[in-house]
Amino acid sequence: MAADYALPDEPKPGTLAQFALNPMWPMFTLMLIGSGAAWLWFVFNSIAQGSPFRRQEMLWIGGGVLLSFAYVFGLFALVNSGTVPKIAIPYFLIGLTVVKLVVGYRVYLYQVRSFELFQYYSSTPVKNGALPFMVLWFVAGRLKLHEQLPVLVTLALG
Image (cartoon, rainbow, N blue to C red):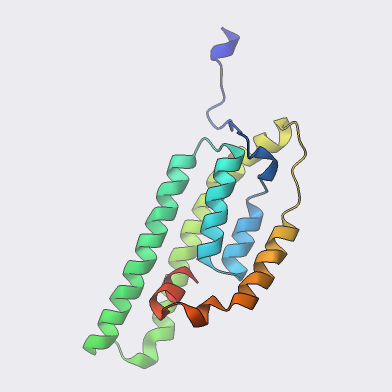
């Protein structure tokens, strides 16, 4: 009977459990580096910690990617049609930032619930995410992807 008992938000870590980090680090990445890197890190972290909310997290991230691209496409269409003046673009990009932060914070809230259980019951101590964050920070600065990718992709995933 005891084997049938399980917590609804209990993580089921797999072979990547040693790489699971506090979801605070992908959230910092979202705020300071960009949504593309952060959302990939959220996906990896979800798989590593065996998040029971993995499906919801993936749906939120997929929706965030689609919504970001739709927002940028829509903004480009409005600017090209003359409906929105070019001088107003920075104000409309605030809405894109809000979309990215809402999606990232929602995924963070899913992960942090099960991460605390993962951290408490994990047989290996959870590592600090500062080093991967700093590596991402410096790699993102060195690659200068915003100069190499199309503006649409840079806006949607930057």
